[in-house]
Length: 457
Ligand SMILES: *Cc1c(COP(=O)(O)O)cnc(C)c1O
Image (cartoon, rainbow, N blue to C red):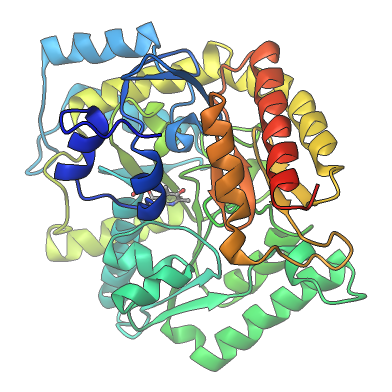
């Protein structure tokens, strides 16, 4: 029961904050969890209750909530040079060092980096870069953007138009010129009798058809998450990127990897594109880039796009785009530290070491008669609830099964996220074996309890 006294944190939160991505009826019933601090992978609320955050905040707090080295890097940079921009030929030394580092750890032999404050802005920025390039290269009609149904690329007007979610309609989005292809989710989208290979081939054929229908000369780029995150943790079907990339290449359409979730270790390699064996034309990064300790996004351009955009900007003397806090020195100092912590202080190693235990735990829960499939890669996974396992029939949506499971978990000190009829797990990279066992034990208890409550035990 929420604390409803007028001066409670719950009441004060509701009175003065406009909530986003929050189910308002359940907030009225349950109250807001107001947080004061964190300890490793745990968060603590104003009542002193501790929760294991199996979602790393929003995928981003991969080093946990009290990393001393990250806080020290922030403090040192605040003391040294607390803020600056990257306009007019001035930028901080931290910004220079981070650009070098991002190119070094990228799959590109050469490249250039542009900074934003979020993943959404990074996607918007790259769309504007591609439009700018189209104009500069004498092909101003090359403006359409291809993405997939269920993809998540952000919430600003352009990145929301890339996002393939039904709630876009509430805003009259997408904007014209955004085309959504089939989600590469074999378990849900595969036809009866179709093998995974045939499914992938069908999606490649669809891409060919869409390019033919729209006109290759009207398409600016194809944006894709290596593993779809907020669409429900959907790894691509086998051979997906190997099937689509040659088609895009043949038509001169850049392939952009939106690595906002996958980047910096989530799938067990630095980049999701490494895990899936392809090299994109550009990378979008955010979230784990600063381990969540600063809002920052980055567009990392591979050599071809970097060279062409540089030439396009030189032709008109500047690329007229940027954010006041682009390349913020504190953000860059934190990102440099975060990359070092992930790559050199054992976080990526721990993702790899813990993945078999994660998969075994997911596998165990997927044996439940009302879990249709588990899917995932590295330390990101989802369990999808079904009313009927054989036919993959979902529960009626008014039962709110995944919300009930997540709320029951919260009541028992575990934060996990309902997405459609799935439960998403993406714990911090610092998770220990005991903490992972706690996560699965609490989730299993919640599943058992909720399925019993709705008479589906
Ligand atoms: C979160 C996310 C974004 C948007 O990032 P924000 O920082 O929330 O704007 C874009 N792409 C992907 C794949 C994401 O997961």
